[in-house]
Length: 325
Image (tube, rainbow, N blue to C red; front, side, top):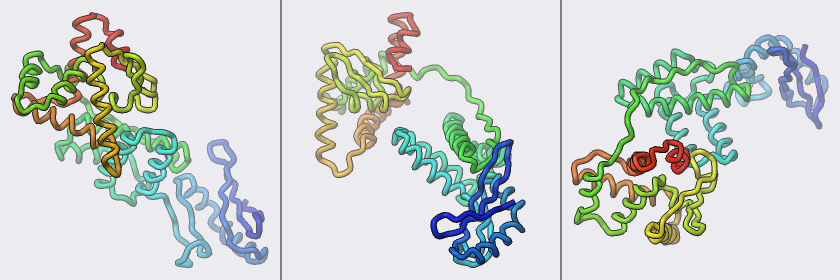
């Protein structure tokens, strides 16, 4: 049965159900300092006690007339959009990389575009997830892209379940993806790119640097040079472990030039975001690939490093370590 408790100058009703063997407390502010009024409002709560408990299990609650501007009894629930905002804000405070949060936000936006912003969390079921997957496939989204979004949804729903916004997480089935070989750039294709007349000497050196070191695009700009080693702090590493990349003496001047250019650019713009700077290299590489008639991404330079290193060493574990996997 619900009971009364005074907190400061205000009375609060306490509904105390046992859910899954655990004692819970659902506090409801009575918005009054009068014990008589509090008693009257407690009587209203007792009439709805079973419904209050059932709504609580679904991450929802009754808003009584004294708690809302409409002055009526109504059900309030956390919308999909509001829950996403809470989740992403918390991820930022937990030190999750901004690029990951941006990717999560994009994933959630695609779902809100299909389900709507105001859907109840408990209305996200296996059927609605299937609807999402089928709709994205019909829009010609690639299976890998759909799976990235589904993994973000699973992380979000697990978070919502831990905070008791929902009682269980629906099963999320990933889209089947055919395994593909690494996107390798042959020596002949790379040579064609490197001898383009339109290619600036700095970009030419940068492309060579990335192919020969296996660096991710951002790593030269966030790493710290110690002797002949670039040290990538754990917070910038995809594996969340500190990573070291050994350079040879020919690669050092290129790294220093990359870092110098990045620092100069940061000092020249009001809101320096690494993404905008590194995109210059990605776009330039894509443009060069188009000119020589090959369909490759900048990240394929990293794949090429991995293949070349394995052919040199025949040691997959060494390659794995050097790449920071």
